[in-house]
Length: 355
Image 1 (tube, one colour):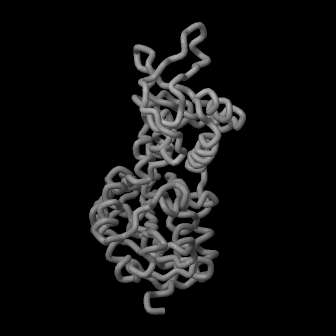
Image 2 (tube, one colour):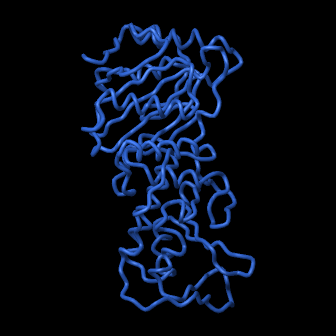
Image 3 (cartoon, helix red, strand yellow):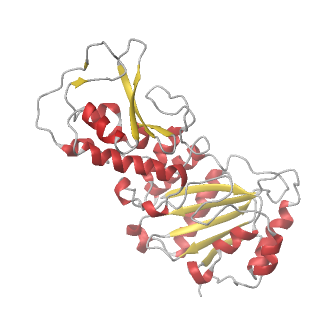
């Protein structure tokens, strides 16, 4: 189970996307305090309540919940609505308008929760965009309902990724491919350089290495190896390498000799450890990415990239990297567009449960 969170300032475009019966085969499985007669009336209901707090600009709440295809038979409309409501309560989304739309355009079960961040008393909802809290909740619910955890990045659908999350998976694919051809850090560094990726070491004050970072030079995006994937931490990669590291930027110094390891046959499978899974919803500092910034204790970004790891571990069917204005695979951000509302008000009529 993976949650993706976004906020915005206009309900019209989001409602038209979430309730697109023709393209998404949408069914409304639950709602509260909203007129469901048409997309236009849904939007109008949300807008009317949002006006109760005019200074609260990001009043649109949008959360997509995606599940493993293996759980399809377990998740009828009643069960998935129950899980969604429980997720909302634990996130602090209470006493407000919402509509839960279920899409049937993909092999994995997934829903879109559209809710008003201005509650029924005219107060703004807070804490509902915490990715750390959401990661813990999705993990707990996955266990509570006996659902399937994601089993690593190999199942992630790259074509649905956008922005810097797509860069992260690009780095993962290129590094793991290069590892299959490398038996030393020097060799890995050369192979990655040919692909436009820089490998750099993160050092302790005594000069010893404590971590490794990888930079996509074309996009100027840097991640700690462990934040791309646990299998790409310095320690995990070093298990595959020779004991000698030749570091180009230490001119005149002897190569650094690491702690000796047990002699054993080289096995590329040692590099991949998908046995541990932590809960997740993408996103960080607001996005958990590093863009030319300083790094932390293991070379990772200090701007919240630990959240990105939690997301990637549970990730099974990502849609798009969450942003402040969109998500869940819709194109662009959600904005208040009255012209679009008027133009599309009769385009789609909601299909209710039991169609």
